[in-house]
Image (cartoon, rainbow over all chains, first blue to last red; front, side, top):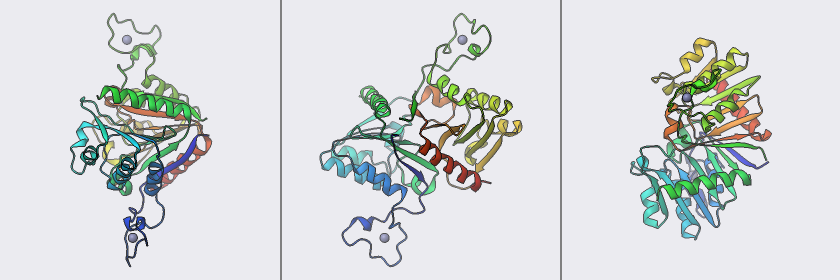
Length: 169
Length: 169
Ligand SMILES: [Zn+2]
Ligand SMILES: [Zn+2]
């Protein structure tokens, strides 16, 4: 079938950022994860985008995630972000960082909530589930993300993304 | 693939309850939906359970949905519900109705949020997405529910359900 992976949260630990540097982490007693976690797998799928990344997520306040998005944008991946108006001015929201970097962002200005949490990677992978892109959700919440490669499903979510993108112009 | 359906919200209208009665709706100017909507499709999938229904949802306050669940329980379907502690005493929560009817309910008493929104029907269908089982989400929010029949995916979510069921004993 089109099921690539299922990621469940909470993770026991947040990932150690030193592991991304040459030489890895040299701390004697590091409290962060050095092994793969649901979040590092999530970041790997997201970071696999080479052409397009369409993000439609209620709230984004997780810097590990937004760093990957900003990196992809810098590498030339065409990133588009739809998010909820109520959340974008929240303390720690990464939306203003995205805007400053030149990423295209559109917001739901209606009283309704834009409550989706999905992303489409290269029109090839759909990530979808209950998981909001926050730091708290990673280690604090029971959450799921499914990673799916079914073409009909992706077409359906891409259609929804495009409709919301036009609606929130 | 294993994709059965994709349901997007908001619906323009809530479904008319008279349509479930013999003779249908006789109101001259009825403001409710008489045609299929995302919610009526959702209710049809849920109501198709014949043996087991495992529900793992943050909050349940939608009476159209809880009526279907209560009906299935009365018909002998083995229903189990996991929900979040913070939400179960909320105004309008249907959890107390479930308990009174004899449905098995377990709650996350930890400070973490049980933020999932999935259900497994007869170990055969998974419903999963962003959609909380509230009335407001139906006509007010942009939400999705995927209905999937992939055996490996269902095994993975069933494992997660069972782990949480044991954990919240
Ligand atoms: Zn470390
Ligand atoms: Zn009517």
